[in-house]
Image (cartoon, rainbow, N blue to C red; front, side, top):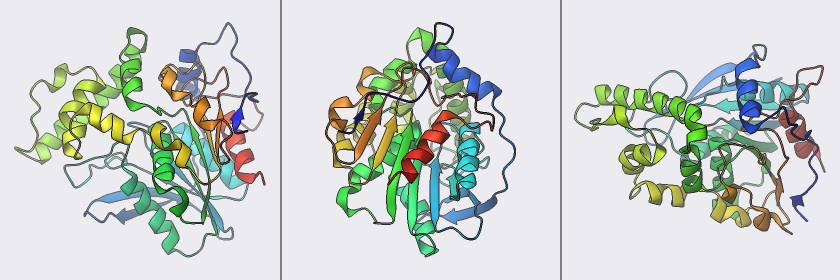
Length: 322
């Protein structure tokens, strides 16, 4: 049985809401700086990806960390996870999606929820070192969808060195979550996302004259508008719905063939009901689904003396479990 009905995460109280569980960790957590080596790799289509690599020089296991929408490798949840993994003897490689490392990417295209080709480029970089016997994939939000889509698409043909995966706060159904984030109670998050995305498109329009129509861009308020105008056509999709449908991980979860844990909090304000795949997890030999009552979106705060969050403890527990 791979449906985990009892979560070890402390349940939400009347004083905590999904919004508080989401906002407080992002606002208050400041993990100490962690030493990393900055690496840039080229992609097959002539672009680049920036990576943050940490190694103790001795271990043969590494975790590849994927951030969320408009995030980066410097997010507190990425740095916290990397530090916790390193303390348990793991090397880590946190990668930035195209255009998310602080420098615009070279091409007109950018990143999206189904860009598994970029994840493959990062994995190929790790495999070429011929150093690691175990590779774990850990993703958050959009990065979690990316990982699960990658695992489901490959199924049993996945490289045997990729042995486990953990994802948190994943919008498994992109269409449903696009509408969920557009509701009035989520206006705060949508404004932040759209402000950042609009700025990136404005900068791209300056760098690629005549390639982008930014008429009406400043009036866009939803993912439906943005993905329909930019994400879909720039990446070969026939509109927003086609993009959401083809890039959602939900349809391919049952094809996963390595031990994989998905954790989605019940009070996550970003997630629609379709993002709680109990049916897909039931009796699945590889796909495990856990849905604690609290935790918000990429929150999962805890009061451990060492500052470690529950999500980090849970990920390591799953990776180390025989």
